[in-house]
Image (cartoon, rainbow, N blue to C red):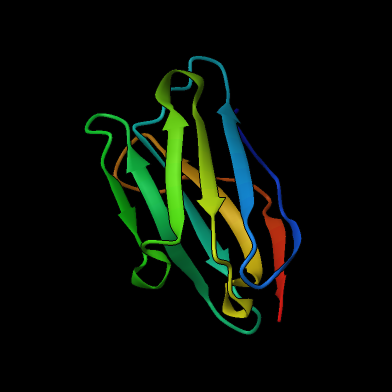
Length: 117
């Protein structure tokens, strides 16, 4: 059984920073990529960013490019989301996810990020 656990959410003022952390664990579990999604109030869950371990390439939602940075450690199945210059519209529950195929199959319970104006 694979567990995905996020941490690091909280309340921050606009323009501030937060760093989310996530670890995926399970017997012999090795992901090929990890990522972050978010659900803003009243909206569907949306992709924020991801990192592929084989190429170390990252991908981001357009609205967070230049403000959010994903990094991680493939050997430890850990991923981080550094969020800078946060805006009120970044307020959401942030979910960490991992995959071993092309489908995001493993999900955390989410961590709340609230950005006040």
